[in-house]
Length: 273
Image (cartoon, rainbow, N blue to C red; front, top):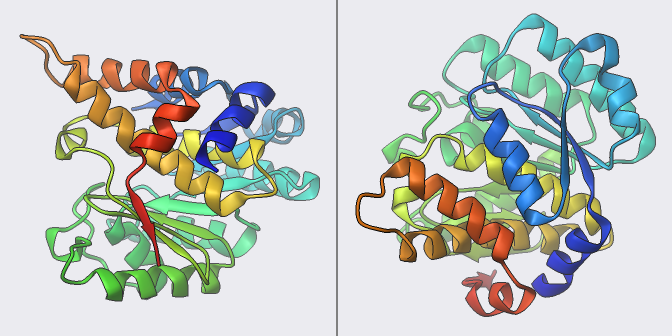
């Protein structure tokens, strides 16, 4: 199943329009190229709809907000909706400020999203109005653990039902769900949190997988999350003396580039609830 999702991305090379933050824009472009997709970055309102019209998917990331880019997000989102293209929202830092939270909530309300991907605090801020976000990181009190796993699976399914899209909560344990089925994923390494942008990269990756696998969106989303976590494991295994977080970032991208369908199938660590 995941093998087919990966092969479809490589075969179709989906073009993804990314309206993303300037902290990680280069990493998002590189991860898309590594997975077999193709990136385009355009955040001017004057061309947002035109660029979206030639793409296969839209990745919206609110990491560095301003009035101009928010307008572009809505214009691009409307065009993607008209064309039936998957739209992924990464609500970076939702809960950290009123403007950020209201912007994310406005996008959820206005656009027919295919998926929302964020950490647990960001998703709780949108679903419940809680504000425990620690900057762009999840608050420790919100973490998905083995002790609260069943509760968080129910939360993820319920928010997917409410938002009418796939919800992906990423952290030590990843949850990817629609309203009926939740993938509980245990790929990845804690050290991935020492790199700025692994979440942003995953949102780009997720958009490519949804665009290339329209008949199996939940499996495609879970495949993308497993792929990113497995790349983190492989990248860590290949570290060299003197490597730090910058080298690790590059090794993760390289692991995505070299990933095979069989390696993904064998290495994906998940259960379905």
